[in-house]
Image (tube, rainbow, N blue to C red; front, top):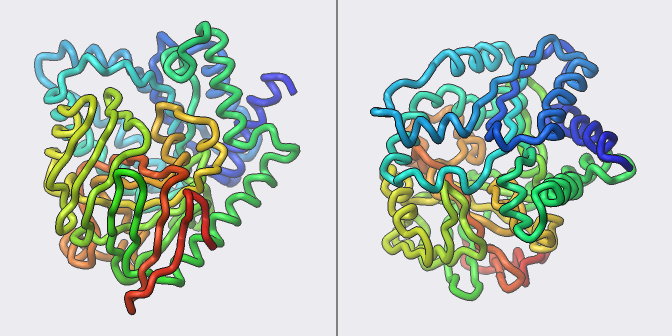
Amino acid sequence: MDFNEQLVRYADVIIQCGLNLRAGQRLWIRVDVNLPEAPPESLRLVYTLIERAYAHGAANVHVQWRDQSSLLAQLLHAPALEHFPTWEIDGAMSYINQGDAYLSIRATNPDLLTAVPPERMRDYQVKIVGISRPVNEAISGSAINWLVVGMPVTGWARRVFPHLSDSDALAALWQAIFAVCRVNEPDPVAAWQTHVHGLMRRSAYLTAKQYSALHYRAPGTDLRIGLPGGHIWQGGSAQAQNGITFVPNLPTEEIFTLPHRLKVEGTVRASMPLITTDVIEGLQLTFKDGAVVEAHADRNQALVDNMLGMDEGARRLGEVALVANSSPIGQFGLFYDTLYDENAANHLALGRAYRLSLEGGQSLDEEAFKAEGGNTSLIHVDFMIGSDQMDVDGILFDGTTEPVMRGGEWAF
C-alpha cells in the first residue's frame, strides 16, 4: 500500500469513524501546527480531509490555522499577554451552536516552547483558558461530534526517532500513526467499529460494578482512589447532544471515569515522561484527603510547581483511566504527545473532571458538581502511571476486593 492510499484511508477513518460526519453538517478544522516544520505530506492531509469531508456530504469546511512559531514569538517578545483575537472563538461557537462538527489536528514540536519561562507560560495558559472557555465547555460536554488527531512535523518526528534523518524520521512517524490508528487493516472502518465495541463493553462492566474505590500497586506506587456514587465509565464512542455517536480521540485505547476529589490517598510514580512545554521526568506525587501534598520530579521541577499552582483544583485528580499495557501504543513506546501516550498505559489527570462521567453531572452547577465529588480547574493534565508491573483492584462498598488488572492487563 503506498503512502497516498494510506493518507486517504487515514482521512476516511477520521471523517467516518472519529467524527461520524453527517451530510449537511459544517466542519470546523483547527490545525495547531509549527508551520516552518510542516512537510508537504502533512499539509496534504489537511486538504485530503477537506475533500473527504465534502465527499461525505459536508455543507462547508473551514480551516483555522494556529501557527506555533507565531505563538512562540508572542510568548518571548510581546510586552504583555493581553491581546488575543476572540473572533476565532466566536467563529467556532457559531458552528457549535448550530450542531456542526469540530476537528482538532495536533502537529506540534514538543521542544518548541522550552525556552518560555514557566511564569510566562502560566500567565498565557490562564488567559487562553479563560478566552477559550465557551469552546472548551461545549467540547468537553459533547455538545457536538468532535475529534482530536495527530499529524507529523519535523521537530516531533526528530524527537521520536532521534537517530534517523529528518526525512526518515517523518516517514517513520507517519507509519507509526497509521499503525496505531488501524489504517493498514484490510477494512479500517470495520476494525475501528470492533475495537470501539470492545471498549464500550468494558466500560459498561465497570459502570455496573460501581466500585467505591480503586487500589493501584506498582513499584513506587501505592494509591487508593475513591470513586463517587453514580460514576460512569466511558470509552470508545460517545453520544453528542446533537444526536451523533462519535469517537473523540484517534487513536483511543482507554476507558475512564472521574475520581472523588476528596478521596485520594497514597503515592504514585509516573511510568513515562510527562510532556508539557518541556519534558517532566520522574514525576512522583503524594496525596492526602484528595490533594497533592508532596510533588517531586527528577527533571523540570519548576514546571510541576507551576502546574500545581494554577488553582486549587490543579492539586486534585479529575480523571482515572485504564489502558491495557499490551495496547498497540504501549508496545510502540513513547510518542512524546499526550494524545498518543495516554493510550499506552493506565493514567490519571490532574485538574478538571468531565461532567459526563457522573450521572446527572451536566445539569449540576459548579458547587453542586464539587459536592458530588467532581473536580473543577483551569487545567486537565494527563500523566501515565501504568506498566507491566501494575495491579489494580476494585473495592466494593462492602470492602471486598476484585481484580481489575494484573500485570498491566485486564483481569476480567
